[in-house]
Image (cartoon, rainbow, N blue to C red; front, side):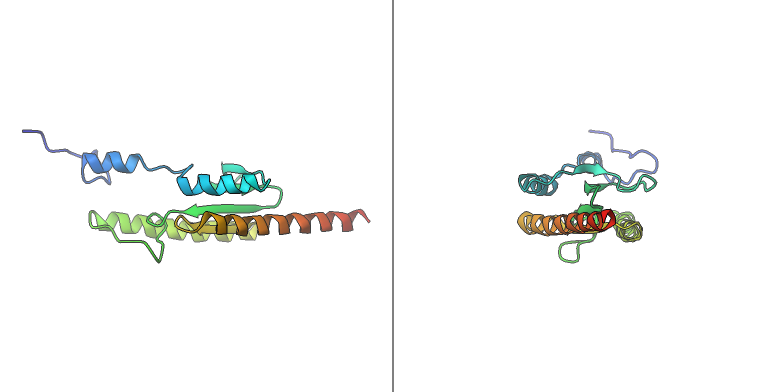
Length: 157
């Protein structure tokens, strides 16, 4: 007979298997992120990955276009509370529902802070079409580039 698993003090895990599963979840370089980055790179766009848009903000965007001030986030349906796909947890619902609600509040705060600093924030759900996401990012980045160029030309006159 095996010993019952005792989680470490303050652990969110309901079992050893659950703990291993949750620890294996990636915070960056997920499949949706990699697909979007591949499409953007193929369009000639260059960017930083998992970078802080603002030095004093302890949050990272999945894709950052620094010169044009565009921050792209690919939000996981579970972790960020997708209205279409989020299913409340059956195990330890108090902890996990609170965690997801906190993530959503942090996302809104991040959006607000970046917008106030002059950034354009693009958020996509992991289930959205990478092609459509790439088209939206490309449009915004090229538009911001064009506006920067026009502003520079006007200031040089």
